[in-house]
Length: 414
Ligand SMILES: Cc1cc2nc3c(=O)[nH]c(=O)nc-3n(C[C@H](O)[C@H](O)[C@H](O)COP(=O)(O)OP(=O)(O)OC[C@H]3O[C@@H](n4cnc5c(N)ncnc54)[C@H](O)[C@@H]3O)c2cc1C
Image (cartoon, rainbow, N blue to C red; front, side, top):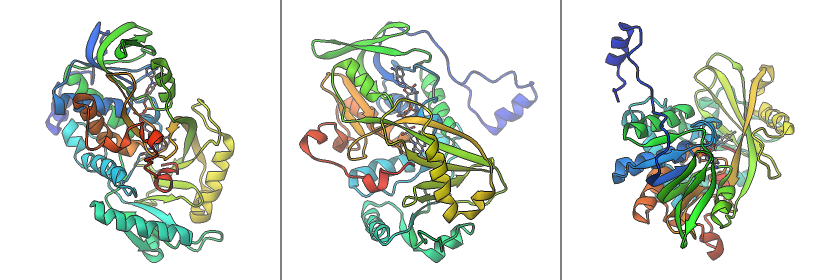
């Protein structure tokens, strides 16, 4: 595949842009592959990419029932950070954040990573204590965060009202190299690189069954026929328990709708990402100028890609206390995705009771930030049977009571 470069843009400008190639092929499925990944979201595509790049496994298909990146990967609010409390979480999220730093160069695709800084506001004394503890933990884990006082918060975000009526801002946990990236571009960049390695990305192809023979995976039944495989990776956020049921086992997982909304575009007003977990809302400004707002999950299980109406009102009402200028903005559009949530709010990257089948799921409300690290670790797990990045995230931890409790860091929608 031709390299994207400034030179290529200049060359195409002189050729009426008729020399660009398709970013990825759309082949018919082969009868079998060494590995099949179900789900062409960021995590599935990143897994395929690192299977090829790090482990030389390129006879791989990624199967997607809709269009690639059309699940949660194309629906999130793109916040990237790694300020988690527990060591296994900090390790995988920081691996992902550090890979984001050079992902555009690695993929030769501009994913628009913008390390503009992320502040998690402390608006109660309990939160202050919690974030001071996290900052200490992060220092030991080698994750660059610090607790900042309310004056520094105000300096970084002048549009914020730090003397709010209900919850004044007391400080915040600040990660200077956290930020955002263009979510579609992450999926597209990985897809292009996978296709370039000879992998097949098969869209509009739903997996309807998992064929198990003698306790081991033999392949998948799909809307385009049976596809055999030696290894199977289930990476279907929102439908993980559905896929697990096809293979005959259960996951400790709930599926709920999570939604976000954006305002009309305005001039640059805020160049950091702010999360307000007490009032439950988070905010950043997109490159187009829209204020990107995320809210909470529905409080009941469902598979709608919409979210309840009352969340829109509650989220905006909560944020207006801290950002009064939002009250003047029209909201432009709203959307939702289905997220899989585990009991300890940490993901599952695991072998399963079916030999050769692996699951990568349970990223809940915060898996976009983890895509490169998750793909890196899950590919290693699939290729070698173990990975230092994923070893603590096995599904057996729920039976053994070894929870990785991130309910403070990850129980909010981000
Ligand atoms: C509104 C919202 C805001 C969010 N904000 C953030 C944020 O700011 N920061 C952050 O880090 N995370 C955020 N998240 C979470 C993040 O988006 C997800 O954790 C992440 O995108 C999951 O990626 P994935 O690749 O696992 O899943 P997906 O991108 O959902 O991909 C799974 C794919 O599997 C396909 N699939 C399902 N079943 C089948 C089947 N039977 N056969 C074939 N294909 C199938 C689906 O069509 C889908 O394309 C947010 C999520 C939402 C919904």
